[in-house]
Every structure is written in structure tokens, then in C-alpha cells.
Image (cartoon, rainbow, N blue to C red; front, side, top):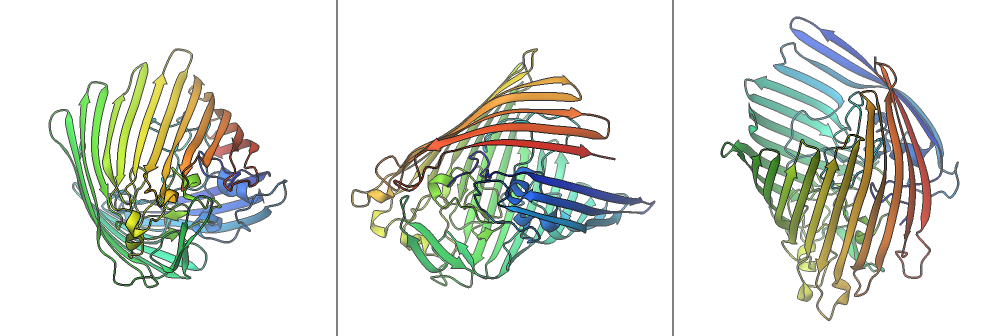
Amino acid sequence: MTPYDTFSSAPQTPGIAGIAQLNLTGQYTGSRYDASFILGLGLVSGSMQNAAYWGENLMPTFNPHLGFTNLPYGIAFPTHANQDEGSAAAIAPLFASFGAHNGRWALRGGFFDLNQDDRFVFIQPPLTNVTPAIGLATAETLGNGLPSLDFWPSAEPGLPLHGIDFTMRRGIAALELTNAALPSLPGTAARVSIGSLVFDHGEGTRYSLSLLHLVTGGDLLAATTLFGKNAMTNPGPQGPLPTSTLGGQVETIAGARAAFHLGASTDGVAEIGRAWYDANDVLEPGTNRPGGFYHLGLSEKRGRATLNLDAYRFEPRYATAVLPYGTPENVWSVAWSWPGIWLKSTYQLVDNTLVGANRQGYRIRYAVDKGPLEVHASFATLRQIEPAIFANVHQVGFVEGFFLPQFNDSGTLGIQHQYGLWIAWHPAIGDITLDYVNDTLHRDAVPAHPEDHVSYQAPQAVLTFAHRFSKAALADVGFGRYAMRGSFAQPYTNVNYFQNVGFIGAQLQETEHAAVLVQLRASSFAGLPSIPNGPSPNYHATTLILEQRFHY
């Protein structure tokens, strides 16, 4: 299971990596038309795991997380430096655009981010690398972002799409049409066609319609679902892990969203999505059914304080295409991979960070901002909609993110609670923040099947002190802890571990064109082995990240 950094799921292995990347941008501005292009130059050398996971997102044409194979990369846990060495260099066109000078329309091609999206219909694939920063945050943080200089660019929204994109604007209406390839494993392919129409009235009033169509091809995919061919459960110390193979997936998702004012200080949001899924290589053809997503939210703002109430329903057959990408991680058990992106090492098309497949419930959030003391607090309760019994999980498109399958006569419904707190104090000496999240997961078991029992929690906390010396100099120091304790697929405690991380970092803007970031992390992991009487998972790691940026 280890060595993985529990805050990011990135492997920590010995070695040194060097990455040099340059984007050369050319722009033409005319009286009627504008055009631009980006040419990328890149060089990677040294430890492949450190390069792929602990640096800035690699240039697309040799990024293994996008499915490119130019780097000799694969998940491994070397015990000494120089055991996962490699190198690659590339010069490649990355992006080009042409459009009207007044912004009425534009055509883009290459690697790009979407201009507009509704996250319950489509979200770009999550980054798998740890974007360099001077601080540390929990994966489900309620905070306003890590300390950073204004010069330093924001983190990318996700892995880029690769294809063509057309946008058109008329008044308050904006249309975007996209056809692009998604990140996928070598030998496989996944392509989406997306259309979105947005009417933005400004000041928070926005209406949108979205439509997505996905088609996959190539080699069969190994999936941790039970509706594909060769479906089986693999017995292990943390329960029967489901596996099957899938191919020829097709999915269509349609969604509508409205954000509006209900009063002078009250806002509302309503989202509804509907999905239709099928695949060629499945265990029980013809058992697919549509799935839905529903979200209603209210927001009340009074002075510095804001109260949010949200209700969600994410059905088990909504947006359930299984899309592996990058290199599958060695986090094979459900317990050790949670909380995290649902369906580990796969991409689920939609945002599943707040609520995932086969869950319904509510979330309350209270925030006090823009003062010497800022406080964000939240509480969420999410329940299973349908039990993960074999009669359900064999049906095409049925996904249960974390609970393992049960026999038909012993199905029970699980529940998840989440507690979140973020406090920021701004005395004259700097900024002190506490970032805390605790996820709990529970499912009862009938006496005849004690292996169905689940009851554990995953508390995470990060304490940081940051000081801004000037507009050009910033530093911080802090400590983080991630732990997990409880039982999964056993009636006794079989999950018990923690990771401590101490860190210190700084950003310095050296000139108007150059800035540098440095962070030093010291990590310590200890706990029970994932296999009874198995090898110890304990490890220590020291990670140094140095990034220099130039912008001319």
C-alpha cells in the first residue's frame, strides 16, 4: 500500500527529477481577426515517479497521465535512487486559435481547458500530480486557497482536453461546442462531444443547458465494477474486491442548471441531470436503465456571514462510464483509497468530490469572511440509495463507490458523515489557519455475514503559519496529519494508520519576470499492514520541491 502520500495519493520514492518546460506563444491581433499559437518544448530527466507526480503538470505530449508513452514510466516502489530513471525531450505544437477580434466567435484546437461547464454534466479529469505550492491542504478543504504571491499562476483546473472547440457569443448568450479525446490508457480511447449554452445575466443570475456524448473503444478495460464480463469477487483481507472487464462504452448526459436571486440576500440554485449508459462487453445485457442527478441549494448572506443549505441525489446509474487513465495505482483496497476520487484511478466525467454515485443527502455550510477571524464550517450526511447487493451490481451501469457487494438476502444501507472546519486568524505577525476534515463511513451487517461490516473514520488536519514579508516575498511553516481507524469487511479493527507531514515553504518574486518557489516536506507513515501479519507499511520521506518560473 505504501509509500503513498495520503493527502494526495502520490507515490513517495527515492530519487531526483529535473523538469524544464517552455511555452512559446505567438499572437496576431488584427482589426477583424485574432490568432494565436503555443509551441511547447520540454525535457524530463531522472526519477520518473517524482517527475510525474511531484512537479508541475508535464507537457501534454509526454505526460503519462494523459496516456502518452514517451516517458518510461510505471508505478513502482524503488528502495534506492536511480532505480526508476529515464529521460525524454519533446518539441510539439500544443495549441492554436483563430477568431473574431470582437470576441464574437473563436475556434481552438490542440490541448485546452473548457471555457464554460456545469460540473454535474462534465468536469475535466482531476490532476494526478501534486501542483507545487508552499503549503498543504486537506483534499476536501473549506479554505480560500493556499498562500501564494499574486505573480504565481493559479493551479490548472484539471488535465487538458485534446481536440477542437468552438465558442460563439451574442449578448448574454454563450455557446460552446467541443469534440475532444479524454485521457485514457495506452491501447484504449475515449472521446466526448459536448455542447453547452449559457445565459449569464451577471450578478449571480445564470441559466445553462448542457449535453454530452461519450464513446470509448480499443482494448477491454479492467474495472472494479461487477457489470462487465468475467465478473468476479476476489477474496482478501479487506473483503471481496469486485473486478470485471468492460469495452465499447457509450454514455449520454443531459443537464439543466439555474442560479437565481430569491431575495435581496437570498440566492438559489437548481441542477438536474439525466444519463443513459450502455456497453458492449457486459455480464447482463439489456439491464441498463437511466440515472439521474438532482441538486437544490439555498444561500443566505448577512454581512460577513453566509449560510448554505444543499440537498443532493446522485443515483447509482448516473454518469457511470468507467474511464481509467494514467497508470493505475497500487491502492487496490477500497478502505485505503477513501476518501478520495470515487472509483480510484478512473475518471467519472462529473464532479464527485461533494457527493458520489449511489448517495443522497444534505450539506450545511456556514462561513464568516473578510475579517481578522474567518471561519468556515460544514456538515454533511449522505446515505446509500440502493444496497450494493449482487442483483444490483450486476446490472449494466450500476456503480457503488466504496461499499463492497453483499448477498441479495443480506443487503443493508450505509451512511457517510462529513465534518469540516477551516479557521483563519490574521494577527499582525501573519496568518494562522487550521484546516480540518473528518469523514466517517458506516454500514451494518447481518449476523450471518460479518464481512459486510464497515465502520471507520478518516480525520485530517493541517495547521499553518504564513507570513508575507512584502508583495514579493512569502513564507510559511506547518504540520499536517491524516489518519484512518476502524473496521472494513471485518468485525474487528483492521484499518489503523496515520501519516504526519511537517513542511516549510517560501515564494520569492525576484524580478518582474521571474519568481521562485521552494518547499521542504518531511513525512512519516505508521500503522497496521493491510494484510494480516504482512510486511510493515511504515516509511519516512523527505521531499524537496524547487520551481523557478519566468514570464516574458
